[in-house]
Length: 175
Image 1 (cartoon, rainbow, N blue to C red):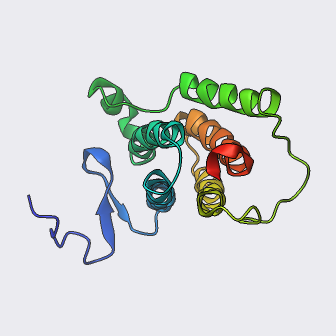
Image 2 (cartoon, one colour):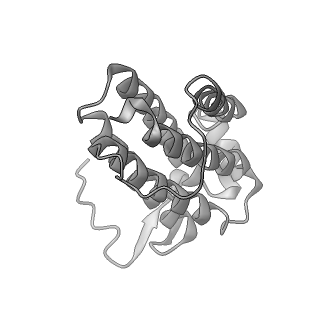
């Protein structure tokens, strides 16, 4: 199938399982923010960072693909999503980030001490991590505009991810 379907020429797009919505729909906006976040993380993964950082970013990106699937599924189709066997975002994904946060704060001694200027440490990867954090926050905010309890874990994941990105940007890994 060609990427050029022309189905969006009138301002509509498909959600998963064929529901059509305006391109300005809250789900489309949220998916776009998550996609943008994934793109910024791709820049980080392909820059001068440690192997450990590349692996962590890759794991986050894998989870973001599942998150985008959850967001792009209309509330009427959640059963279809689960039955189709797609990967989503689970409480275990949130817990994974919470472990990272705890390790960064306790073992690496990275603490929130107030507002930090993005890029002030002089590391390009750190500046991109801050950019990723701001996009992540926008994605999280956009999820709150969708009245769908199925997105609760996705909201938590993005909240913890933005915290993780803040800590990682300040850690030794990003320099």
